[in-house]
Image 1 (cartoon, rainbow, N blue to C red):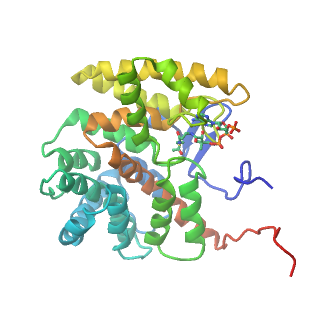
Image 2 (image 1 turned 60 degrees about the vertical axis):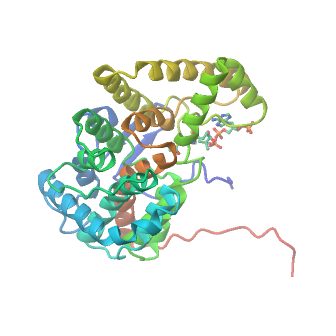
Length: 358
Ligand code: ACO
């Protein structure tokens, strides 16, 4: 038995394939390189959900319109509750908001759930800043509307960067949060229950909670002026460097390059190159330190390192980064929940009893 179920195959899926040896991610037959920066989030959401959620709109444009309407509906439902939700950390506020949605299985339920983190996260970030929530504009693309709801004004460069991010994190094999969502779906609970399970599992720093601490690390290293010394001390204390290492990838996480490309495009369009240069030098130093200090492990950069830079540039505060991860991954959770449900099989493994004998 392996304590972390590593190498255990617990589902068959048509949704995505993570090739950890080659550093390749395939989403329903498409290489990540083909999708990130080229496809809109709506198109990838449809790709993932197509055939799994009955009565889903048939074209990308129709899905974008339906998703826009779902954003409006979620906003109308949640607006009266925003003051209470805003008393929580943004991620907990998003989770609480999702818990208030109906737990059905239809396309309308799926679209509300995809819409929810996109509506709640900007509203909760603004509330913490003492600003009014901005209602969704259903005519806009999903990423473009999130940028507008966060910042108050539309911004095409930032919308393109967010689209690239949401597509990049939309699905990733049987990661911890997706497995949690599939377990719940296998009990025949509704989609909201499965998404809540995914949200709960995503929160921790070993999974989707890493990018906030990446910013803290970059700031601390910038203040110290000695990247290598700071990183060596951290590893010597037994700490994990956030944004490095992965359960499946034994080479560089392909999502790191997809996101670095998006950060680079943004820096070329709007400046911000010095933050990217700092991150690149920290990345180089971290990889050197990890190769020296953990020579038996193949530790490389994971998705979270450049996620931090991208979401910072979009204007999200670090404490809301995981909310944005959930905005993208929710499409994968729902697709996996439906795929699991279609097997008709309850997930129920065994444990080996090693306690005292009665
Ligand atoms: N920094 C320092 N050491 C590390 C790191 C790291 N980032 N990652 C793994 N290690 C070390 C561990 O200390 C452990 O060493 P030990 O056996 O001497 O104690 C060993 O490498 C474990 O290696 P693996 O078996 O390859 O890692 P595991 O599968 O257990 O963990 C994980 C994977 C959780 C992602 C880990 O690499 C980590 O904690 N990274 C930092 C947090 C992070 O970036 N999380 C986001 C992951 S991506 C995502 O989920 C979206």
